[in-house]
Image 1 (cartoon, rainbow, N blue to C red):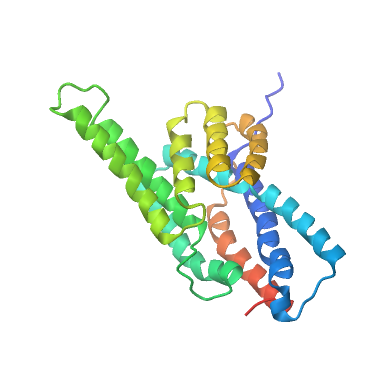
Image 2: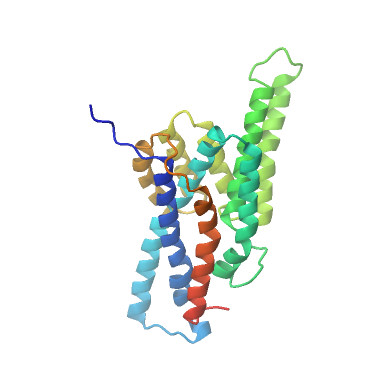
Amino acid sequence: MNKRFGINGFTLKMLAVVTMLIDHIGATIVERYLYEGYLYGVYLDESLWYQLEKLDYILRAIGRIAFPIYCYLIVEGFLHTRSVKKYVLRLFGCALLSEIPFDLAFNESLFWMDSNNVFWTLALGLLAITGIDYVDKKYPLYNTQIRYGNLCRMILMAVTFLVPCVLAYVLHTDYSVAGVLCIVIMYLARRNKMLAVGLGVLELGLTCSELEFFAFVILIPVYFYNGKQGPKAKWFFYLFYPVHLLILSGICYGLGLGI
């Protein structure tokens, strides 16, 4: 009997990495030519500018696939990790490591507080669902054995959700509150992966931009996701983010489009 075709976690991560790279090529190199080229003595005729604008739209549309996959994998990682604490620390560590490369690539600065990388959002989203899971176990719904248990549950649920959202907003993280909410939605709907991802993409489309609706295409690979980890390449996926941003900022510099 033939085994049913399946996609493992490694394949999903590679899909996220490739589409993120495509997105960031548009957001750095192409958009600097489009919107900042004149600052560096680069002038485009109307026809070339229009073509680059269409290319940028295509690249950014493809790139919308990446973030919802990362959100879904954060939920999967939380459900299967041996140590949530180490998982959270890895995400925050990568956020710190990636901040300068992120600022060089997108803000043309070594340090820019008004915009911070997506790993902060992913880490805060993980903190949110960790807190929700703890409260859910500590104060089960309709538990009459704990005095004011349901009230405590509602208050703590609100706090564990709102604190990461406020931090994402204050820190100006990539995808900000919408990103944290996406992870929470996917966690709450985790028993049905198609519903979880569909609701997450819908939320991003309604709260961020219509371009996010292109991410509905990920329902296809998620449908075939078999829940297996696949080849282990944990540190590759963590380090790819800051390294590729450094390379892209270096390319921009080499093309005369930045510091």
